[in-house]
Amino acid sequence: MMQSRHRKLTERQTGPVKKPVHNPREVAEIVAIQALSFVASEPERLGLFLAETGVGPETLRNAASDPNFLLNVLDFVLRDDATVKAFAEASELHPTNVAAARQVLGDALGDPNWERDVP
Image (cartoon, rainbow, N blue to C red; front, side, top):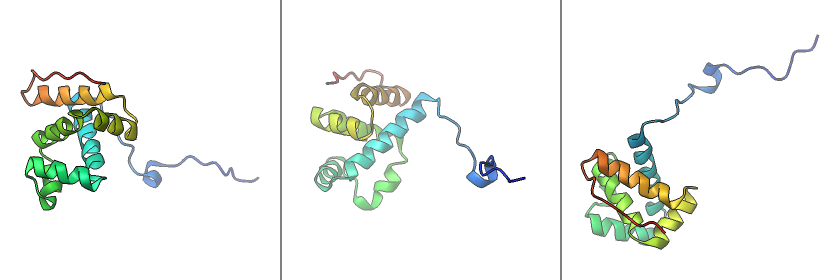
């Protein structure tokens, strides 16, 4: 009898299965980290962001763990229609999802009065 080529993979072979994220704040932080990666992908955009925030390239990785810094990243992306559209397209999100992530993170950090018209 021939063994089946399609054997069920065990968790040990594939690694642990990651649990889906259901916490809105965690999702918002993930979107903000994606936005930071997007900003960092273009030297001119990154230079402008670093100049405005006062963060140096050497401290960027550590700053990314600060939710207030992530809030600033989303603010930077959302302030310009072309930038938010480009980020949304690159990350396969709708621009309203980017704004919603900013709202959720702002609410979690005590900034509930932020409003934004999204293109």
